[in-house]
Amino acid sequence: MTDSHTHILPGMDDGARDVETSLELLRMEREQGVDRVVFTPHFYREKEDVSSFLSRRCEALSRLEAAAAQLPARERVALPRWELGAEVAWMPNLADREELKDLCLGQSNYFLLELPFTPWRDQMISQLYELLGRGQFIPVIAHLDRYWDKQRKEQIEQLLHLGVPIQLSANILLKFFSRRKALQMIQQGQIFLLASDCHSLHHRPPNLGPAVKVVARKLGWRQARRLCRWAEDVSSKREEL
Image 1 (cartoon, helix red, strand yellow):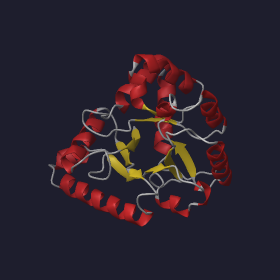
Image 2: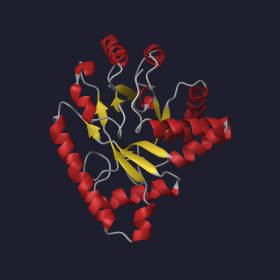
Image 3: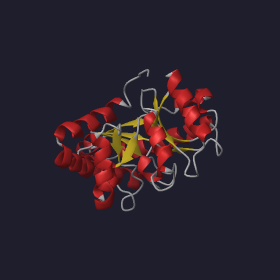
């Protein structure tokens, strides 16, 4: 099982602050059955350029790898495997951004895209449509559930009609009042994958394992395996729409 949206790299953003927390988050992931994670720290184009981000990400990964190397062999090999990626904040003229190739998930041409929390404009939908039409880089819309209460219903529906891959936060399936809507969207094939979007040990912790069990219990293991397979594919395959 792959967790394709995490903030585990130490000191990169509002996620894990140090390598000790990073290692504990990885242990929690493994205990839930996750054997592969994608590190997706926030990338904000208005705050830094891609080269600076990649340098910081490399340094954070080196610190984590050095700490993992000090663990007993049995514990070290039990940690999930990891890949690099980013959670890319929306930026204008997205379809023309060549730097997206350095921000994709693992070895794929998918990238995790965080949309604005301010009211969406028609221009944003148009730019997403253009990006999808080119097929070079494929956005995966991060945590659609976080936009439900911030955007108009018709705009959410417009986004879904684009056919853009959608990610839901795992914790939505662990809340009674939001579970029904999430399960309905999964059953209708509107959700591409689940991911934890974990940030810390207690506030927004890893919870992909329990969420997948909810899907299996409510919709059957076939649906649960489909979501898990997509999460695996999204960071390992290069595809064209």
